[in-house]
Every structure is written in structure tokens, then in C-alpha cells.
Image (tube, rainbow, N blue to C red):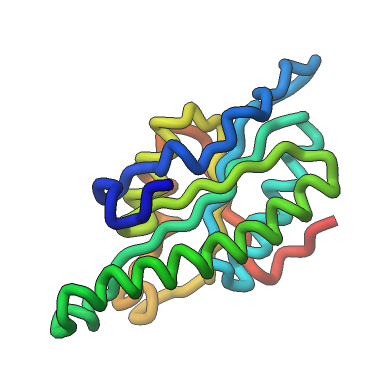
Length: 177
């Protein structure tokens, strides 16, 4: 299995998409066939996962659960071998966290797949949506404004403005039923 180090930045690890599962057949009134949920495992992204799961179940759609890993700038002073260790550790943690989300989706009768990405989250999600033929991206938003948004940026805003498909944003305070 490839490691994150073997994949070019912002590229989808194609081996992570479980190809043995069939793509759902089209249903009458089906709006979405393939939904990508971006997650950083925060409260806001948990809300996005719940919304994506609900829509996937309603549409009989395939759910792609994506997480992007980028090497933090704070490691730039570290020896080269530390980057590999950091990436392996990040990948293992992401696999564990996504695994629990996949398990939850399967319990709901939804076909779900893990998509590990490398690079900045917004760029990686947009690239994955293009390459994987996604109909809808669901992403959490923290609802930052003013200076906080200026300093922190907004992954959700960048995805909304550049995605090749529809984008649904979900706030942590949204109620999911």
C-alpha cells in the first residue's frame, strides 16, 4: 500500500477507494450518486458527516469520506526523517478516525469509502471531487468572521468558490435529524 509520501501533493490515493464495492444504481428521483464529505474530525466536520450520511442514505448514494494531511510549517526545522514519521502517524490516526465513520455509514446501509488526501485541504478536496466524479461536496464550517477568518482562512469558502459540483456547508450548531 502506498504511503502519503509516495503520492504527489493534492492527489487522491486511488488504492484507498474500495473498488470491490459497486457504485449504487440510479434510483427514481435520485439527485446525488457520489457524495464526498471532507473531515478534519472537528465538531463542524462531524456535523458535515451527519448531513452527508443522511443525504447518501436518502439518495442511495456512495459516500466518500475524505481527510487531507499537510505537513505543518512548524516542522520545517526538523530533520528529513521526521517528516516521514509525522506523515505515517497522521495517516494512521486518519485511518482510525475514518474507519469509525465508515462503520457508522455501513450500519446505516450506506456504501462508504476512505479517501486519504495529501496537501492543503481545500485544494485536495477540489482535486478529489474532480477526479472522482463527485456530485456533492459536504464540508463543515466554523462560522469564523472578521480577523479570525482573515488569519485562519476558510477551507469551506475556498471549496465553495472553486468546486466542480454543488457544495453543502454544515455548521456545528446545525441540528441533524
